[in-house]
Image (tube, rainbow, N blue to C red; front, side, top):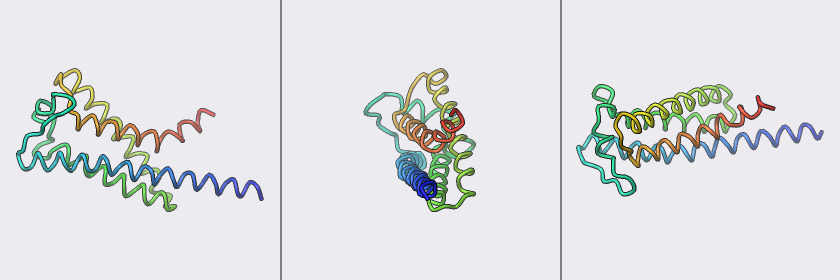
Amino acid sequence: MRAHVSSGESQNKIAWSYLIAALVSLIGLGDAIYLTVQDLTGRSLRCTIVSGCSEVLGSSYAHIGPVPLAAMGAFAYFSVFSLSILAAFGYRLARPLLAALVGLMFLMTLCLLYLQAFVIHHFCQYCLLSAAVTTVLTAIVLGPGIMKRRS
């Protein structure tokens, strides 16, 4: 009987972590939508914390073809939100898809941070916020699995 209760408690913890991931993804979604709207309307962004937004967002790395990278980020964050909600409510297929998506987002984040640091030589505060959100999502979604394998 005790093992059954323990199993249920661990299921609730897993569900809560997915709900937290969904909430965190909304921060990234808001950031990405803001950047996408600014790009599509042609407005320039003001950086208040660091002074490299114009250089980063005006670089050739800010678009893939005609599509702003931020729009792809918005799609990714919306997908993370959706998959997190599904995973929280027990849809098992959502969990590996969410893990794969967050893993890809983290790898993309590392590439974009490299570009900002070593190619563009400027940082964008909105991009850094997105990197922080993706790092937190990686810790929430992939962290427990990594820790379980080490034990």
